[in-house]
Amino acid sequence: MKRLLLMTLALVIYSYVFSQEVWTLQKCVEHAIENSLSIQQSQLSLQNTQLTGTSLQHQRYPSLNASSGFGINFGRQINPATNDFETENSLFNSIGLNSGINIYAGSQLTNSIKQNKLDEEASQHDLMQSKNDLALSVALTYLNVLFAYENLANAENTKVLTERQLDQLSKFIAAGTRPENEKYDLLAQLATDEQNIIQFENNVVNNLLALKQLLLLDATYPLEVETPDIDLNDIEALETYNIEAVYDAAVNNQPLIKASELRLKSAEMEVDIAKGSMMPSLSLSGSIGSNWSDLAKQADGFTTQRIPQEGVFINGESALFEVDQTLPTSISQIPYTDQLNNNLGYGFSASLRIPIYNNYQGKVAVERAKLNILSTETNNLQIRQTLKTDIQNAITAARAAKKTLQASDRSLEASQIAFDNAVKRFDVGVINSFEFLNAQDRLESAKVNVTIAKYDYIFRVKVIEYYLGRGLSIQ
Image (cartoon, one colour):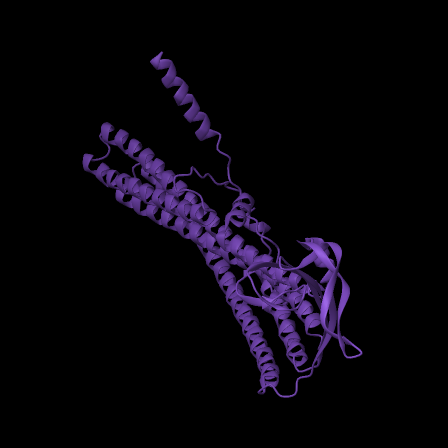
């Protein structure tokens, strides 16, 4: 039973390890963008700009607010029913509605809405630029992983070759055609090959870790990347690239440039907004309200009584004079709704504000907005100049990398011919192991140089293609 459980566990682990999906460059880029904290921060910034735009749009509509208050009064106060002062504790409640709308304010609201649309569009391009930059970083890191794998494969092939020659030499030694001590050079080379393999394995681990960190994956995640066939012949000849053509293409497709242009328009709109603060403004408002108090009383019934009046004289003679007077039989509190109807009041008002002198604040705001335009223009020029410099450096570096690659290919070709010849001569015993290892070292050095030159060339080309807006792929 225990053995069965162990076999089942081993099968599960095997299935998990060997069923891992191979990550393509496209998947790496999509995963990085989806999980990037900086991208999420840019998205939140964009949403904040959109909320500001929604708020500005709704400022075109009238506002409407309700209010209500409830409390208790102590001591001397006015009875709302009689308007007389009374000294009695009482409860009160007030309710109301008020509304207001801005009719005109120097077109500040209209211009603010237009400015916000420009800012929102600029934020969208900022978000796109962040995604493009992250995609480029992922692509270059992905290439570093492929570069490390290729170096590892070269090192493993070298070890196999050394083992094969050591086996051949052992046969010669056994046959007595070579001295025993000659194999020590190959044994030392084999140890060096094993050391190189360990070094390149560490490079693979380090580069995979860098890619995992960009993708926000756990360091222990078993990441496996696709190794595409890279045909350098499919890469467009760099001689066809013109610095001005690449720069013009970058200006037209780089989100950073578009965002800077939109921010310049936004800065220009700020001048109109500042000028609007010095224009007259007109607003309308209205309100309706009522109140209730437990001091408000009403008579529920009446009775008539004849009441004598003293101090009445007829022909100089004192006489008794009586008058009929209606008196309430009971007193009760006026109902809540009746009080609200009885105390209902409403009104409307118009407010006109004409700026005359506000401590020079309006003119300072206009001048500051104009300075911001100049600052934005300068920043845009700096962005374009930096872009042009980066493109010049990228094309120059790519052309140099291509020449280095061509030279490395020629060197590898010559080293391969020399090594093949050394193998034949070593197999027939014409040269010793020292001479053979020298030829092998030159070949391995040439292979490493070609690998370095090839990926350096690919790096440079991908940067140029990034500026051209052609997307990122490794095929």
